[in-house]
Length: 148
Image (tube, rainbow, N blue to C red):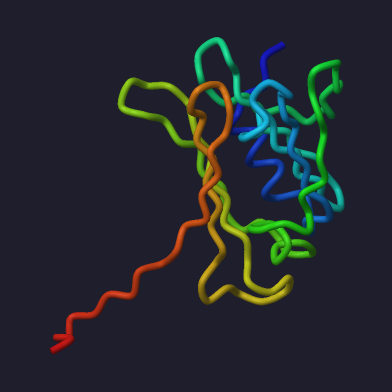
C-alpha cells in the first residue's frame, strides 16, 4: 500500500509532539548530500526519502534499513536542526514543481515549544540528483516606508 503523503504529513504535524532527534541517511557514494531525513518526535517518526528513479519525495513512518553502502548519521547537534530540538512543528508543505512532481518538502518550526511563533524557522528540502539539498529560509523584512 502506498502512503498518502498529505495524510502522513498531516498526522505528523498534529500528533508528533516535540522534535527529539534528527538523522540523515547517506549513500556512501554520494556522501555530500543525504538520501533520507529521519525526524524523531515524542509520539511519531517521519522519514523523508529521495527517490532516485524519478527525483521525487517519498514519506514513510518506518525507520529505513541501513544497508551496506549507506551511513546513518545523527545530525541533531548540527545546523539547522540543533535549535529546533524540543520544538514543535507548526506547518509543513508538500512542494510540487511545474511538471507535477512532488520533489520537495518544507517545515516551519515554532520559535518556542509552547508559544505562538513570531518568526518560525523554515527548513526546505529539495530532491536534486537523487539526494536532498537542504535550505534554511530567512524572512526578508519589507516595509512601505522608504529606506532613504
